[in-house]
Length: 117
Image (cartoon, rainbow, N blue to C red; front, side, top):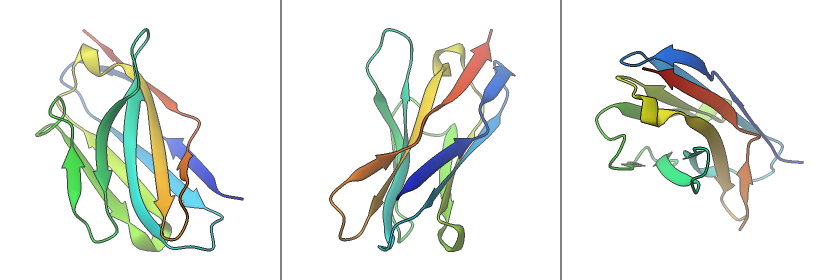
């Protein structure tokens, strides 16, 4: 059974930094893409960043230049370094993982990030 587990959320002041981690386990297939979405109260879930197994990355315009996604393939873990944070970054952050040969995306339970002004 595939598990995706996030950690690292919390409360930070505007201008501060947080790092989220996400570990995927339980699949017989190799990891393909891992990434992050977020959902603020009353809003739709939005894409934040993703990283492919080869290391290429994509970012949403709202976080480009402030957030950095990276991964440790040996640990099946992805990280999201969030710098220069803004109150509008407040949301529940969800990690997803996709495996080669498996059509499903697997999601974590979400971790709350709150940025105070």
